[in-house]
Length: 392
Image (spheres, one colour):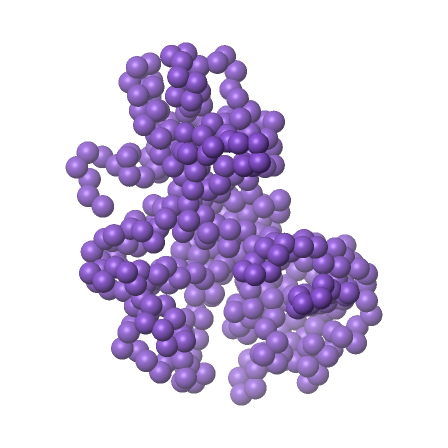
C-alpha cells in the first residue's frame, strides 16, 4: 500500500472577517489561509483507500524571519516536522497490518535526513520512498550522490507517462534507469549516523524540444536488486501524483475554499468532513475507470443504487439488477449537471460532488416511501445528513 504525503495551501484571502488565519506564502505575498499536510492510502493501481493523517494549521503572522534562522533550529521546531509526524501515523497503521507493506512517500521537500533516520530506526515500520533534492548535496562516502549514480552502469530504458502539470502537456518520456545501494553521509555539522538506502536514478533521453528533461533521484528503504524492482519503485513514485489529484478534488470538487466561517477552527472542522467527501468522490471516479463493467454495488449500497435509478429515470420502481459502475457514474454525473454529450467524456469531480448531494435527497425520499433504513455510509457523510438544528 502506497501512502504519499504532501502539503497544500488553502487560500482564504477574500475572507477578511475570518479569525485565526495565517500567511500561506514564503515569498512575501499577503495571502492568508491554512496549511494542510495530509497522507492518503492508495493501492498500487491508484485506488484511494482513505485518509491516514491530516495536519492543518495557520502560521503565526508575527513569526517573521523564522525561515532565515531555521537551519539552527531542531527539527521539532520546524514545519519540516510534519513529514515525521505523518510517517509515525503510517507506522501506527503498519502495526495493525503486519502482512501488508506500507510505503510512505514524499516529493523533494521530504528529502530530510531526520526522516531517513526515522525509517532506519524502525525496521519493522513502514518503508520510505522520497525524491532527493539536488540542493541538499547528499554524499556517498564523500562523493556527491548525483555524481556517484551517474557513474553507475545503465540498467535499461523505461517509458513513463507524465501527467499534465501547469503549462506542461501530458506526454510520455523515455528514461535511462540506474540503481545502486548507497550509504548516505549525514549533513555537514550533524552528528548523525549514516543511512543505508537504495537509489534509483532516472534521466530522460531525447526529450522534447523546449521541455526540461525528466530527472528523478529516488531514495528508498525497499531493496532494489534488479531492473524490474527499479522499474517498480519508479512506478510507485509516479503514483504519488494521486494525492495532487485528491487535493484538486478537494478544492474544485468540494470547493473547500468557498466555505465562509467565522474562525479558522470552524474551517478546520468543516475541512475534516470535506476531506472524507473528496475521498469518496475520488474513490468513485477511480472505480469507474478500473472496473466500469462491475456492478455498482462495489461502491453503492442497495438503497443508494435503487434510489439513483428511480430518481434518474423518474420511475417509482428500480430495475431488478444494479447498473454497472460506468452507468452509475454517468447517472450521478447527470443529476449533478453533466451534459453527457458525445465528446464530454466521463463526469468530472464537481459534477460527481453535486450529483452525490442530489442522491442524498433521493435516498431520503426512497427510504421514507419504501420504509427502508438509510445506508451505513450516511453516518460519515456531511451537511444534509447532520442532525436537525446542528450548527456548522
